[in-house]
Length: 291
Image 1 (cartoon, rainbow, N blue to C red):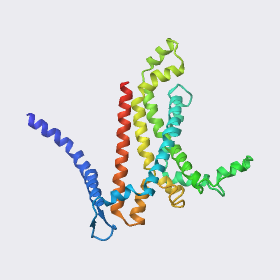
Image 2 (image 1 turned 30 degrees about the vertical axis):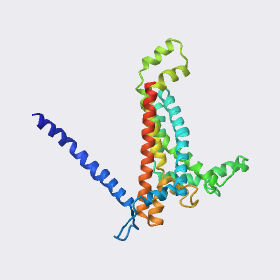
Image 3 (image 1 turned 45 degrees about the horizontal axis):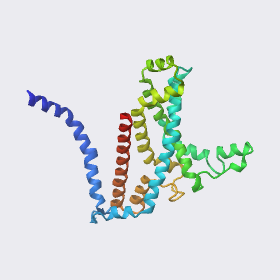
Image 4 (image 1 turned 45 degrees about the vertical axis):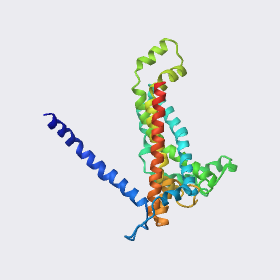
């Protein structure tokens, strides 16, 4: 009976294991195999080069510059995006009029198409006929008129802000759900004891929200580091390397240079970086919870 029970359990798990193996394990092994090759993606012949592609990546300044630029977008998202999401979640967690209406409104940006969002913001930030520059000119602030997406000094920041605007709704929903799991009796007891709003927030809300914060931070990092469609729809390839991110570099290696092996090596390095960052954040959150 014990053997039958064990086999039955494995049979229930088997479909998930097969799907994971076919769509995750096998592709990863195939990508790792290709990363050891020099291949143009067309001819059937491949040249084994070992770890040469990985060594080349370590000396590729353009690649690491794209990593830093993705990190900059991620930093803006971790601060501006998540702070905005937290403030709005705290506001909607209270008993306010039209609370459900605001919850729906705040969740609209994340479900919009990235291509549509990118094109709309490209129109808003256009240096010649954009709404932003037109508004600044009409308000008598012509000195602030700028080619926002054509200037390498401002293009990446504009992309980061738009990315944060589009993504804050996910954090808002998750943080709001976390806030609503906190027992209201704790807040009531704190008020009875004379605790102020800041004291309640730092002593009750923040400690109990650490697991939620950790999940939101990890999702923000993973999503921001992999931003791609928004950049293409806003600036395309017009600024060469000034708005490059890792996914764009991988695509350039595949389609521009026809170096599929090198692109696969870049993908593996990029994946390892994301895994390390995610596990580091997870360990930090666990230590904070223990303190």
